[in-house]
Amino acid sequence: MKISIEAIPATGLKGGVVPGQTFDFGKAFTDRMLTMNYSPEKGWHDACIKKFGNFSLSPATMCLHYGQLIFEGLKAYRRQDGRIGLFRARDNLQRMNASAERICMPTIDIEETCDAMVQLIALEKNWVPHDEGASLYLRPTMIAMDPLIRLKASATYLFYIICSPVGHYYANGMKPTSIIVEERYVRAVRGGVGFAKTAANYAASLLPGKLAEAAGYDQVLWLDGVNLEYVEEVGSMNIFFKYKDRLVTSQLNGSILPGITRDSVITIARSWGLQVDEEKISIHQLCADIEAGKVEEIFGSGTAAVIASVGTLRYKNRDYIVGGSEPGAFSLKMYDELTGIQYGRIDDPFGWTSIVA
Ligand SMILES: *Cc1c(COP(=O)(O)O)cnc(C)c1O
View (cartoon, rainbow, N blue to C red):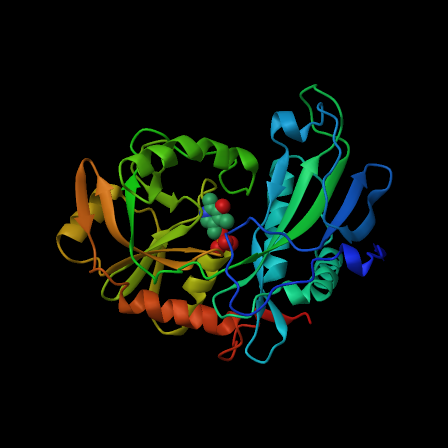
């Protein structure tokens, strides 16, 4: 795949970030973006790195009507030695292809797209924040482009990657969050699109999220859509429960997003000799275990926060408290290990990191 790189006059560039700069998550974007088009005749073509800017779309463009829209979220990190690294980027593109297949969209070539992403990051390396905890968030996105308001799969698509410098997720320290178990609404159902990173999943989560916030909780914990009994995941994170001798997380069942951080946590915990069980977790059993003092720590995992400690779980009008006002030792150790690998502070025995610039 040939990537054309549009020349941008220096006067049209904002340039980058400076050490110590703070960022409002997802609000600022870098100078450039990558775009490529798909048609049945040409496949993916016209890959181009160009100036970040608006698209011009027909109001009938299919992605605006029927939800054929998928995305990914990953980060580029400025490592201790100044080089720029990526973390498990191919796994994100692989997951994007799994999402694409479910939503009837074309898949991308992992290696070629990864190369294109690396070229984009290399051009935007001055935008990768300097402070540990901060990073350049990458948002690969694919949208249906046919200007047609008939319900069917589009023939043409646009793939693009935009980049946003983001700050440390825990600007005020890693304070445990409170989550409310959602007893009325569900995020995803068996046979649905829960495992795909597709727009509709997030639209469906907004109302319950808003209600949770109004009730004084940070996020929602989803139960399964069939029985409203088995723990699935949090807003944009997978969830873990640390017992004395084992770590437990929900088993992937098609309605849970298979997080790359989730997989990394499982792999690291097992490498430490800890037993990790992916299983069906009944909310009743879980609450009984918390009450009996068996659950030492609860934490969420995801690219944005890495590890988010959970201190309160509300279910059936009761607050179940786990740990104190600080994250538990295991959560902190996992956070340090993961960020250590991502920022090149410690060795990466798993081959997850790649240097891009
Ligand atoms: C993205 C996402 C996650 C976390 O996935 P990571 O690959 O770890 O970032 C978990 N749940 C949902 C619903 C998500 O969208």
